[in-house]
Amino acid sequence: MARFEYSVITKASPALAWLVFSDLHRWNTFANVYGELRWRDGNAWEPGSCLQIELLRPVNAVIEHIITTCVPAKKVGWIDYAIGVALAQWVTFEERQEGTRIHTWGEVIHSGITIGGRSVEELIASFTRTWYEAFRVACNQLVLPGGTLPE
Image 1 (cartoon, rainbow, N blue to C red):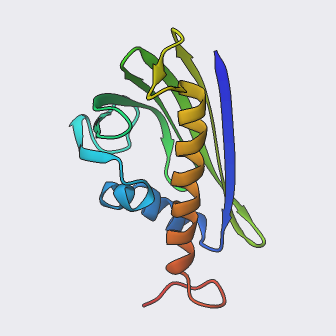
Image 2 (image 1 turned 180 degrees about the horizontal axis):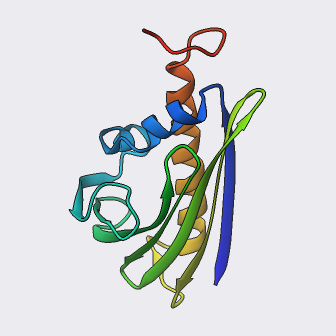
């Protein structure tokens, strides 16, 4: 089992960061790797619901993304399974004086597979860094000077 983690700080409030995070239509702006994203079972972001994620790059696969916990603007957790890889991941939204700290961490289990000559751990670390940095930028772009939302 391998562990990963990454954090970013945005000027956005936890509520705004959650609105950006939970909007599936924005996900390809954070990492242009997705095909269709759809809630297959249950209501969006509720524990037990299943988000089906079509991954186009670096490998074509369908990820079953089962929500295990969700308190909007506070925390969300899920379990993913695809191509022989299982992943448990959590994201927290922590209000701070300078904005919101978004922290993600998880654990990956796989049978030693490589994808495009890279280990699963390398791919997840690279993907996580790319996605969360783009997410931070998107949140910051929605905040006016002084930390307020546009009307």
